[in-house]
Image 1: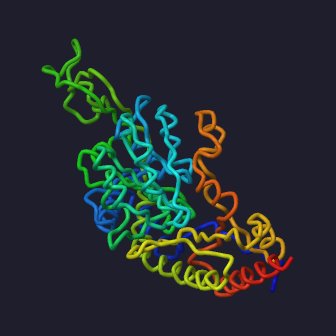
Image 2 (image 1 turned 135 degrees about the vertical axis):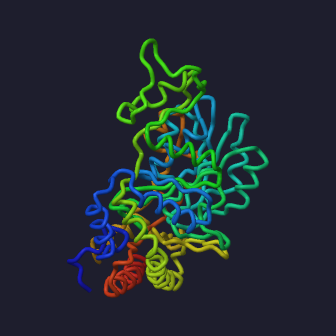
Image 3 (image 1 turned 120 degrees about the vertical axis):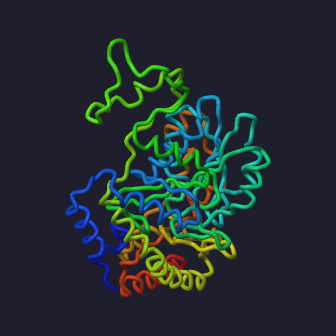
Length: 411
């Protein structure tokens, strides 16, 4: 076995070819606007249709989508949000910015998703929303989460950064929650030139607000003006003078939210349209790799695979698995041994959010989410997975897992 060549995550999680290049060339040669061209609207319509939702709003990133979702819900210092403990920084940083209190929910240690039973005990009169992640592309158990949300009048925001193309009980992830936020960054199953995202919703007013918030629009209370003049200056008829926004037509009483520049460019959207058509094919390639890994791990008594709900489709953005405590092998030693002896490099995701320095500053603490902590520090691992992987790389990883486990167990 060749130990010299390192096998690690590919820098791009999808496959680009001449179709994407042609899409970019078409946009550039058209002479059309690059920041808000027709491909943006087309990509939004096609993505909404793929998800089975009414509206999709293209934005600059999933982080931008989550910022917008939080603004749409109007969350502020008097509010609480329940967020799972193994989320990514982008899932909750916008909540910290607005001084929203975050209540960390522990995870199901078998699926790595939020434990629905943990949600209800964290609800108070201040709780306004539940923010969840489909870890690695593995669909969370949404039915009990929706049931709790309905009973307490809470909004559900899905961070679907890992889960484009995943399905929960035959329905695409993102089609049923109040707001769902997708990522098209460089590592994801599809990418819009390295960055990009989408806000998906069935709520027309939410979609309308998302379109405004991605492009510097203010939202609040305003009244229609009876006259279209400011002192001696009258509203011009020519469009050449119309960069005044609504200054001629409205007087503002209160501003609740300001938008920002969270737009997706036309070339990105053109590439996204091509990528969307390939998505299911690329997920199938990931599933073939995952199946091989699963077979190997199932054959080793000291390891276990992630649990997937019946009737759900894992998107396999990440391939997570676990070392069992009874194996008698230290997780960190196993990870280091695989890299040092076999050239297999793992990237472990995600650090428990309640133990981050800023979250500890907000009174979060060790022991707050014991399942997440135990799994993260002692059990969880992740193997490289990408549609670009070769059979040789997959075989080498499979063999390395078996050899490394046997050798460490016999030490």
